[in-house]
Length: 279
Image (spheres, rainbow, N blue to C red):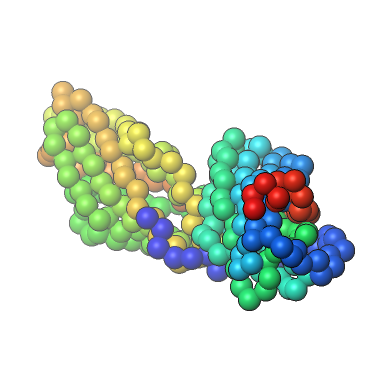
């Protein structure tokens, strides 16, 4: 699993579109319910806000982000900003990655010392980044299994073999990779393969990683991820229990640059009828 938090590495000048928010505290209610604003789309990314409610000590709502682009989408929620008449707040949560067509909903909570029973406020959805998949491939030498040494470094990628087992029917290796660079790393285990010599022959065969759970992982500086490489070669071709398997990394390690997206601003306004019903 990933072991570190994302440290902001891009300084982006964003123009913040703001609404005129005046001090309009709501009296006589323990809870305020807000209208759901219209969905907004920016560069193929659809963002919606729903279920916005507030009590005196906090305000919360559900934010849904859907990636309609052809790139990976990284979202760093704690760059988003709530703006109230009394000041600003930011949600606190981990960043996440959306593949094309993926959709995810998160609950944003603003909580501090202000009175959150307000007639209106705004949410600026910042922290959206497109992550192009066609980055720079880092080449690495073949890695033999069983291994003579358990770790190596290729460019800004530090790789360690955590576990290896082999039988006639299956060989499985668990690798751990740490990204040391300053951009964005894409780890694609589906790209790797192994080459081995046929039984009693000098001819070679190559088989792809057969791990059904493999998928592209995205790392920032000093983040770490584990992935599996699983191989199934018929025993009549290669007896993996006794053979040397040479891992071909191909396009497993890629560096790319995240591109900031100007996110939308949502205005949340009190729904009088729903607020009365909720109280």
